Length: 80
Image (cartoon, rainbow, N blue to C red; front, top):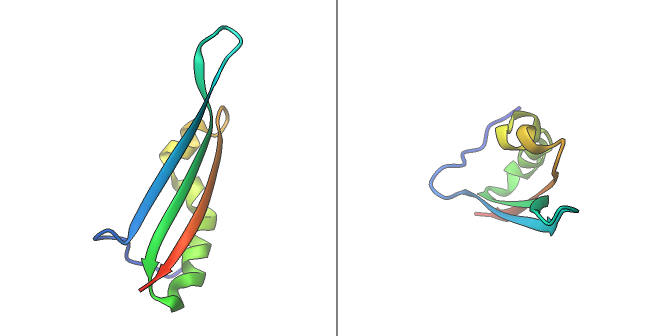
């Protein structure tokens, strides 16, 4: 798989957590939505989609919470 440079602000993420009250009144995070925005050349779009498709198995945060919190992720691609 090819690599894409993601330094110097080319890759950003916006994360939204949805909190609900549990049966005992304690607030818990139920869902996390992550939107990655990548600035790259048009010819890198396929590689970016492939990388996004497998990133979760290498993401420590996702692997830590995946069994207790519904985590979704999407990639927004901006051409340079």
